[in-house]
Image (cartoon, rainbow, N blue to C red; front, side, top):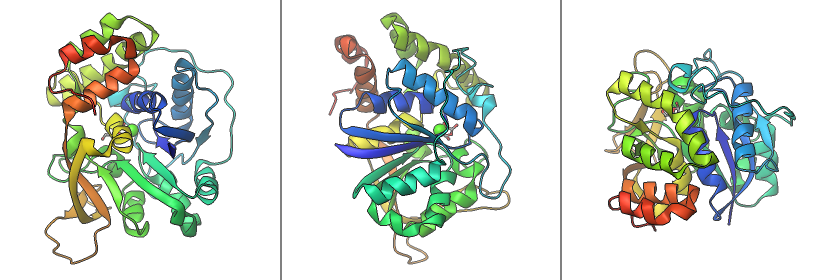
Length: 323
Ligand code: BDR
Ligand code: CA
């Protein structure tokens, strides 16, 4: 079992990623750290608690981290995820919110304690950059950093060339890629754009008719409308769950090693510069994912959330033989 920290900014697709992680026996979630991104960090923490309550896992500690990016002012994605970050679904706040130590201190403490620790980062990399700046030696114990962010060949979702997580805090993203000194696993838009909850899958989920399915339907409505308005996509792209899936089943995706950095200024702010041709002759610092088995992912995702419905899920998902 892998010991992991999930750093996130829930966020509708973060919420789905947390659900997948909580239903995955291959991983032991030591704690969840929250960063500002889709919503301010305090709101993200509230949303995390809502998910933990729904999944009956309030035993997992939640830590609030950065309230703003390293250098730039915060620009949230409440146009995409709703004012509450969960599609304006109206689920009540969890009353008892305990404030623990700062997320970056928790990350450092865990890195010191566990000899092998993996981090799945589903939001801007601010908490990670803060921890890395504070105590770089602790990262010697890092087994793997899997980050949802960036893109290689795919177009951006926050500018023509930039993906949201790295666009919000490009300085942290650049710092982590350049200073971690071990390959970052980049789960970018090239692979996550292929992970779509289509209207027929959403309809299937609606028919499951339990607490979890009702929650998913209510948080994704806003997201589906946004996708139609913004990109004329039917359904919604769910980016973050793929990063969790890569931790559980690495052979779901494939890609190549490369040197990667992030532009911090100007028109291309937040763009990942992937030196795929080795122009700079720098050693690679990233594994850039470009291919994914979308059907296999979707089957695994839904079967873990709705284990009693496995037969129906397999009937409706093409090419979805689970690993
Ligand atoms: C990323 O941006 C956020 O809006 C999503 O939660 C995801 O982490 C996709 O670009
Ligand atoms: Ca996210």
